[in-house]
Length: 114
Image (cartoon, rainbow, N blue to C red; front, side, top):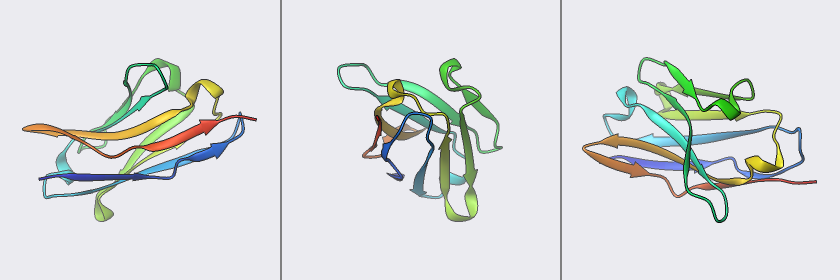
């Protein structure tokens, strides 16, 4: 069983930064690939970034150079540092992993607006 809890969302002005956290539980968390997804109003959920248990990272093109995913297995956490935020980054951000089945967190709202 895996539980994922996101935090760190909020309201930020364009060009600002936020750091999202995903705290997990379960023995597989340390070796699991953890993803960040996001879902904007009226749009489908889309993949944003991933980090493997070996800390190999991958990003969707439209966040490369702005977002950084990292993990600290000592505290079972994965982070998404988001810089140079744009209004189109507004969405609910979800943490995800898959071990026999998909696990999702409850999401954290990010709003980029002046």
